[in-house]
Amino acid sequence: MPEVFVAKIADLPEGERKIIQSGAHDIGVFHWDGQFYAYANMCLHQGGPACEGLIMHQVEDVIGPDKTWVGQKFSDSQVNFVCPWHGYEYDLKTGECVPDRSLRLKKYKVVRRGDDIYVAI
Amino acid sequence: MDLPLSNDRTWSVDEFDSGKALAHAARQAKQRNYDQFPIIDVDSHHYELESFNEILEYMPDPVLKQLAKMANSGNSKGVGVMPGGVGYQDMGGRAIRYPLRRIEKPEPGVHRDVSLTRRWMDAMGVDIAVLFPSPMLQLGLHPQVEAEVALAFAYNRWLSERVLQEEARIRTMIYLPFNDPDASYRMVKEFAGKKGVCGFMITSVRFRPVHHNSYMKVYSAIEETGLPLAFHAGYNWGEQSMGMMNKFIAVHALGFVWYNMVHMTNWVLNALPERFPKLKVIWIESGLAWLPFLIQRLDNEYMMRSSECPGLKKLPGEYITDMFYTSQPMEIPRDMSLLESTFKCIKAESQLLYSSDYPHWDFDLPSTIYDLPFLKEKAKRDILGGNAAKLFKLDIGKDKLAKVA
Image (cartoon, rainbow over all chains, first blue to last red; front, side):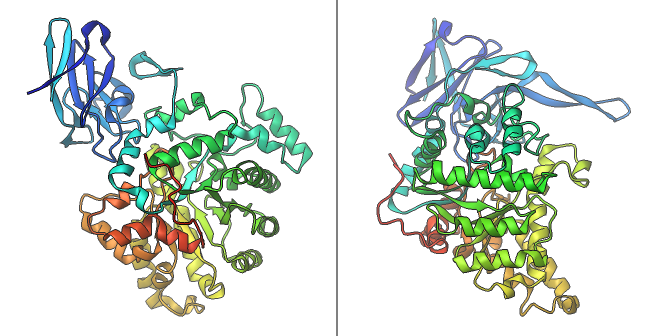
């Protein structure tokens, strides 16, 4: 399977992302919590650049022991990237569409070779 | 520009260009051969407050003009002049064009509204766009009727002279200050026939019954022009029933349908289509799913209570399907047969008009129509442009106006 160079690890620091294009492949590569993830940069909704928007932690309800709504907070662990066109949110670690996890972006294998990052296409 | 993110992070962005942000739309336009047929967008927007000081130069009331200029200066941009308030259209910046629009630069020497509008039109393959304001969609809630009138005249005169004169691909349906019937009548008389004016528009968020006798001269005047009348939907979190909702999604989902349902119901049951048989009416930005509901509901009750509506000569639903609808925000159901049934119900192949609503958060690309599996090529092209060209009597020639790369 051919590999496409993404970046030197040092040039894609924690919390950042890079969009690469190779032929018909338009791919978003994320560096998050020490891992690299790569997905097709094509929203399942209307074809927007899904990987180019905000990276936001999942919003969560805080429900009290008596089932009352206490408030909202951002998740400490789950993080999503958001299609900038309409707000479709994707789980950064799985590529699943958060409101319907049966939908997911095409995932690419990320290869670390020395100081370099590649994706297999 | 630093954008605030979750858990106290920030994201620094240096530039924004609508054309680049819509690169995928441009790719769709090329893949689907949009260069082969016209696309007319019947509902799009700009942000008029970005040009508020220019608009205020056209304000007829010198005292209100001074009040508005002061309100628009310093740190209190527009506050105190325009109604509105709470709302989260940008989804906390997730629809990133909202915050980044501030740093987008127009082409040198071209009016900002013309430049930015052309940019997204070319990316989507849109040849003609009907442009509407944004915050002014709630101007019908202004507690001072005279302020709505003054702002409406100022806006329309500014739009006509500064935008419509400069770019023939941009059109508008003139905002009517509907809380004042006499002023609305004067507005029709002033703007009918002006360059770029393709109809008249009532913002639906307001509390005036459309069947009131004071409006009959307005409808007559519009009917005489041969141009259509449109009702543009909106939301109002300040309304009592909407005040029970704690989520913007709820206020938006219901609000954008509710006001048009009220006006449509009054319009039909008071037999206005019979009184103004040549007046074409367009309902904008309520999506489509409300129509089968309202048609079924009114038809069913009318069969039992027709004595309340003696002016009708056919079922309410038959009047409804004679009217026109813009497509956005088109609901994409899990069961697509529901959408296909809706298209059939409203005679979409002749009555539906594509609209993007760009740059608002729930905009629709032309592909939302073009990719529908149950439409034939001719129907797609009619909905995307042919129906609007016929309705507005547009002669846009044979050449594609949008630059489809």
